[in-house]
Figure 1 (spheres, rainbow, N blue to C red):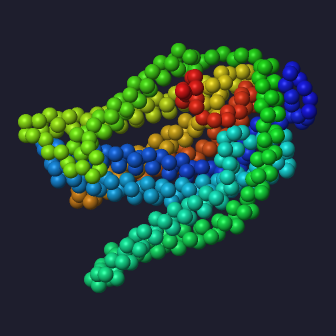
Figure 2 (figure 1 turned 30 degrees about the vertical axis):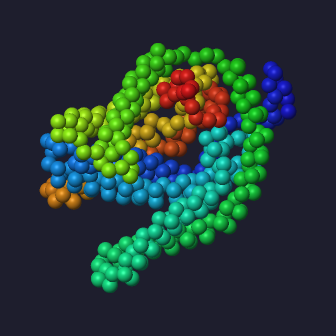
Figure 3 (figure 1 turned 90 degrees about the vertical axis):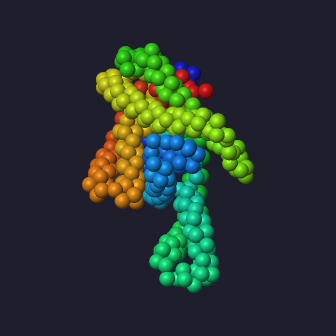
Length: 432
């Protein structure tokens, strides 16, 4: 160890550098697309719940009550189906990604001891990757056992159920889930025991190397000149965007509070009987319910607007920062650097948004088909979903490029290695 300017560093100096993995783009893309589609499923579910409450509780509305009931039913089913598929895809992809990361980190530790993975990758390896696979198998087993037992009892009690194709379809699907969950749970046990000592050795090594790498990064950062601040990164601009986002977030919170009030106005507790309001007061309750429904729609639009602002700012910030770093090394704002290192890039954010749009379009297409709408309308939504999903796949495959941009940031600006989330998405002060 050598001391320089009051900081201890190793010889050779430890440095933060992401561990590269062959074929890392595909698992990362699957996870990003699944997360985006799950967000779209949540939006569909919430809007379906709004339609269901309006159908059940509002005595006058400009949309036919039967249509609201159909929208609520098909929307909830479609949202749950999409969320289930996303879970089935994302978890195995994440297991594969972390398994490759563990092997790559072990190889780097043997071949280049001076390289230390950043906190984002170290956090992914807090537990053996096979432990996630084991939990995945347990979840599949639990999800499959319940309907399997229920449908089995139904088939035994009701002789006529054996002639129903739906009963046997549920029985077959549940059996597949149980067998798959049991196989994954059993097979992942030896993998957990094999990965645990390897991961423990790596974590002990990182515990010694991280302080040295932090000290060396701080030493390099002290020697760097301050770089110019592009207009998009100016603190005044960032504060303005933060205020806009705060207003949009306030709309979302207000919509949530309003809907909680709607629920309590109609049914104060789970076991309570629904409240029957007098005829003179019923129009006011109905009007408030409709107003809250409209506010819920505004909350969705506000959330989309906040997301678009974040994506647009991230595109501009990445372009400005890396244009600034396209030259000699220089220092940049540490809070901004941590945001760029910790959070997903603009391409991945836009890809997740397109995946959410694809999920919404698929849910709408399913609802249109269930309601017997015209085939051209259904086809249009399906085409839109396929196009959005294709765009999401292309954008979310940019993982290696995002990693190269982060490495450029570490090489040229030598920022601190962030240990935890908690920085404003616009790069301002830490969020309290």
